[in-house]
Image 1 (cartoon, rainbow, N blue to C red):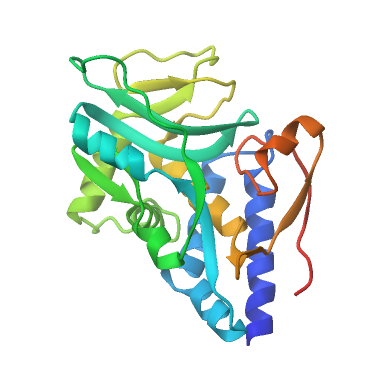
Image 2: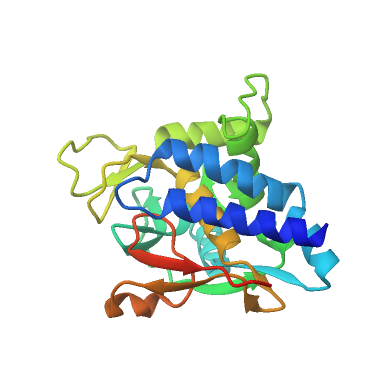
Length: 256
């Protein structure tokens, strides 16, 4: 059974990479349909934990550690919207997107987050987005996208309070390219650097981030996935897979 699960993990990681790393093929529907079903299978349904147990290894998922951001947001009381992200748009890592209410004294400045390896349960409990005065964890977002937003199925009867809050934030804060010729106006649009056609809400960025962590899963602190890059100027990003508009050349999944 463990060999079968290993093969399934490899196949699912390849599917994530194939669908979510091509600058010319990245589509919202791919994020919703591909990443949610795969990530729910391995994280919510505990496929990763079960596989690791059968192999006698400890799994961990690398993600940006935003503990200081959480402290700052709760201390300042002026943050209206925040999402951690950590994926790539136009080949550049994007993280810590936020919007402040008027009246904040001075200028908000978040520290640059570093990566940290989290056990699967702790990974899902991470606070990674904020809006309407509510924190959303990785598990909240994954369950919402899989069970409410049509990722695995579309449950119109799902009316949990957390889902309602997520929907409100998704509708009120859209993220688009500052170089987009069809620039939108209004307080709910947040422009970030880069040139890309898609218009994201925070759930799509965080779903890519969740999928990205699964692609970079460690067993006993050793990478399951290795990759090579096209140009030397990309080596500064380290050896991990970076989902989004990236410039990856080839991904090698070694035999276990």
